[in-house]
Structure formats: structure tokens, C-alpha cells
Image (cartoon, rainbow over all chains, first blue to last red):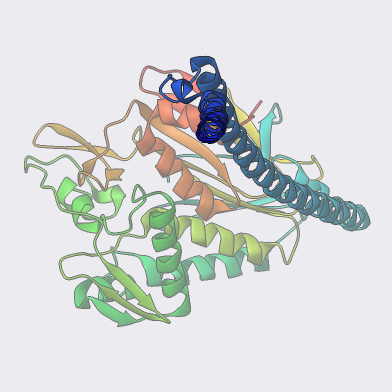
Length: 128
Length: 277
């Protein structure tokens, strides 16, 4: 009787020890002390670096696009103003030509007041 | 074509009218020149100008105020090369009486400052103390223009007051022929013409040659490489001012400015500028 009880306890203890050992081995306690994989670390660092770069490039592109749109708007405005001025000048020139055509300039005023001639002189200019 | 000449303002006035007779117009012209001389002569003690020079201020006639304003405008326009306040410098150089009476003397010339202050307010003329006016050259131009205007009531006319020529209208020949020297004649259709030079109106003081073209910057007779300039202007007054301006400027600047003018250099060359061909 006593030996049966002892045998039973032995089996129970053996089963418990077996499962404990199984659980311990399954937990891989020796791997926690090992260093992390350097390739994985490098990949992670590279990924973070590229994400930062991407954000900076996007910010730069946004700034330049905004500046370009402002410059484009100013240029369009200047072109519009120049076109308006050119149209006004053209109109003024047409009007001036119409006025000058309508009022003929006196021949005497248009001509040079003096020229060298071979006529006999009427008077001689001397020091005043 | 009718001509008439007479002496006034220390020179000979020559009047030419394209009409068979103009006796009345000539008489009126002579009277007007006499009236203007009585206003502008610095050699007549009782003239308006002499009174102004004596008192330093005057309520002037319209004509005197107008001539002084023209002279001041010319001074402004020429940067001071033309200056009506050369009176004392002229007297110091010996031109202290009508030119017919100016002669060589043993007394040395003295120099005076020019570019004095002159203000014209309406007809009120005031001089800076120590300065007097000489309106000799511009006065003749003014008179020539006035007489030409008078004669133009009769017919196309030309007036020569010594070197200052004014024209009105165009004669049958198409232009008024004015001799500059024995070899060069200019045809003038409008505007005025004037000659300034130091080849005439010369005298000596203490053996030193003097002439009547005072450089306002020095107060002495001007020294340039030109001896005579004939200039064409919008009228006789403008031409008179321009001739003096170019004379004082010298040949180099005169050639660069290229205004209608005939330049005679001290070495005897005659140069035409401003398209006078």
C-alpha cells in the first residue's frame, strides 16, 4: 500500500518536473541576453532617416511652389499693366498723328532759319 | 527794296524794307531807337539806366524792365557767361565813354567783380550795392527787334543794329542775305543773327590790349581761341546772347554744341556749325 502511494507521488512529481522543464526550455531564456541584429537596426535607422528626408523635401517643394505661384501672379499682373499702357500709347499716337495731320506746320518754322547763300549781301554783320 | 541807315547806340543802324518807299516808317524807326537809347544808354547821364546805376533802384519803364529781365534770363540760361553786371569791369578796362571816344591811355586797367545781384519786381529794379548794369549788346538786339516789328507794318523788313540783325517776313529773293565776312554770306529767313567779337572795339591801356567782351568769371576782357562768333537765334536778342556764350566758351565747346554759328578762330580759320552749309 505504502509503496503504491510512493509510486504515485513519484509519477506526479515527475510529470510536474517534466512540464516545468518544458516550459523553461520553451521560454528560450538564453536568447534575452544576446545582442539585437545590427542589420535590423541599420534598416530601422535608414527608414527613419528617409522619412525625415521625405518630410523635408516635401516642405521645400511646398515652399517653392508657393513662391512660384506668387511670382507668376505678379508677372501676369505686370504683363496686363504693360499691355494696357501699350494700348494707351498706341491710341495717343494715333490721336497725335491725326492732330498733326490736321494742322500743317508752317514751312518757315520747320525750315532752318539760316543757310549759306551766294546772294549779294544786303547788310554786313559786325561786332555789336 | 529801300534802305536807310543812321547812327545810334554807338553803331550804325541799317534798315531794309521791301517797298518802293518807307520814309515815314524810317522816321518812326529812328524816333523809336532814340527813345530806347534814352532809356538804355549808360553814356547818357539822364537816361533811365544811368539813374538806376546811380541810385541802385528805380521804378522803370516797361521797356527797361523788359530788357533787364531778358538779360537776367540770359544770365541764367548761359550759366553766367552772359552778364549785365559787367558795367564796372568795362569801365575799369577803359570803355568808360562811347566807343568813338575811347582811345589808348597810359593808365592801367582795373578789374571789378561781376555777377552782381539784380531783382526785378514788376517794374521795380534793384541792384546789389556795388554793381551797375550795362545793356549795350542786348539793348541793340532789343532795339533791332522793336524796329523790325515797326517796319513790318509796312513790308517785309530787315534791321541791322551793328552786329544784331532782326528780320520780319520774307523778301522776294526768298531770304535776307547778310554778309558775315568777305567770303561768307548767310541767308536768313526768320529769327535773328548777331556777331560778337574782339577783333573790333579794341584799345590799349598802359600798353595792354583791351576789348569790350568782359568775361564775367574774371571781370577782365575774355581770352579765348575765338576772335569772332556769328550766331543764329530765335530772334536778335537770343542770337546776341548765344554769340557771347559761344565766344566765351571757345571753339572746342562751340563745335561740340553744334548750334547754328560761324566761328572765326584766332589763327584765322572760319568754321561753320549747326548745319550752316
